[in-house]
Length: 267
Ligand SMILES: Nc1ncnc2c1ncn2[C@@H]1O[C@H](COP(=O)(O)OP(=O)(O)O)[C@@H](O)[C@H]1O
Ligand SMILES: Cc1ncc(COP(=O)(O)OP(=O)(O)O)c(N)n1
Image 1: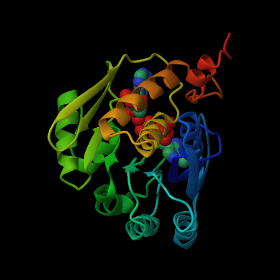
Image 2: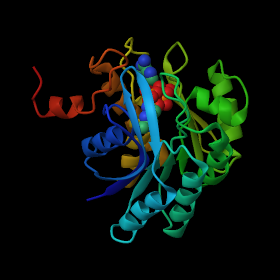
Image 3: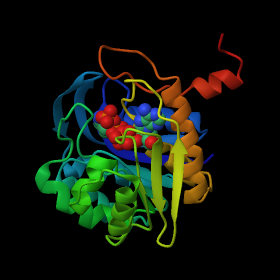
């Protein structure tokens, strides 16, 4: 069985973070493993607290996995502190991790800082160069390149600038624009658009985590980045279309709709 590892924060409400990643890996038929970087207290309405694990504990978790199990792909999500970012980069180099997907998580939908502002430079200089593909949303791409992004053309410009920072490929996600949901991939040579209709729902908690972990699962199974992003885009679109009105705020996406449908378990 193919394996995928997520290195990310825990979302106790299950919509984003490690929990979303593991559900996505399972839905893709990939054996999921996790290295927890931080515990967050959050729900569909917002984040109320973050507690980082020590860099030593993060390092020990990575060591435990890589010294025992073959890892086919790795996703990096929320990593809040410079010390932890550096530890992850050192370890992934040491163990020659393949198929690394970096989701440069910075701020939750509710506006809470999930990356300490002083850790931004470390994320850019230590994690981006390890990435097979990096998947910023528009606000994250704006912070990384220091320009305002209002149009798809701006997303393309940002993708080219981020590519110069070291990742092999860059996917700028368009969930924060207002028309169709268009994501822009730059592979160092050409731009490809992945477009879906915009679904009218407030239940989009964890969309970025889900997309990046679906790409990771697809890379683990041997897809190239273009194929992996295409399938992941279909997966997230279905998961948003059938998203769940749980909680009082932004509900989570539905990871198992397609599987339940195939198994004839839906009314
Ligand atoms: N309302 C929506 N309808 C359809 N697709 C969406 C919608 N919102 C986000 N997406 C898609 O979900 C994925 C995650 O994007 P985005 O929401 O921008 O990430 P993040 O959660 O990191 O802010 C992208 O493929 C984006 O196009
Ligand atoms: C623990 C944790 N990691 C990442 C996020 C951000 O997830 P994202 O998919 O971008 O979803 P929203 O926060 O934008 O809904 C998170 N909230 N928690």
